Length: 150
Image 1 (cartoon, rainbow, N blue to C red):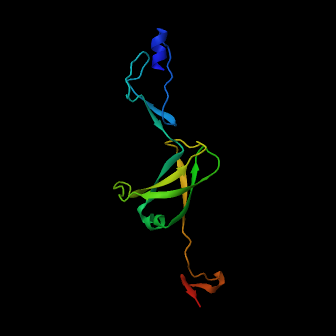
Image 2 (image 1 turned 90 degrees about the vertical axis):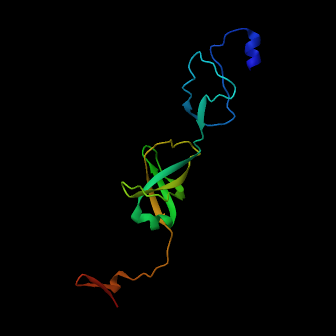
Image 3 (image 1 turned 30 degrees about the horizontal axis):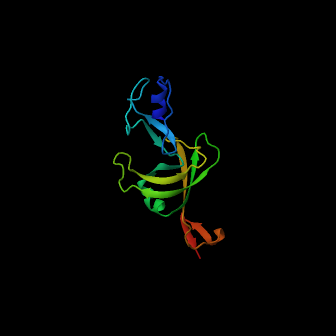
């Protein structure tokens, strides 16, 4: 504690700083250097919680309806074994004018802390099951480039 440092009348080479939050130090204040002073309430570090991340996925505008009917999505990250089921949280309503892509945000559970910000990932998106009529392959005849069903 501060009182202990004052009463010892000794210069401390190191001091332990405790945070009220758990997480990972993401950024250090540029004002924090060896020998520098800091005041109560001054921001020294930015701490981030990596237990829940977002995957920002670029999707072609033609696939918007498919994306809206997302049932399940699977995340694959380079350098990480296995796959992770993720959930669609938000579809950004603004389409990028340059590449005609839109951005979807998926929640990525990261309890084991195996994913980190800015990793490259691929996402497989699965549509909700839909009712449709199914015909046996043999019932379809191809004649003159057209499909005919009897």
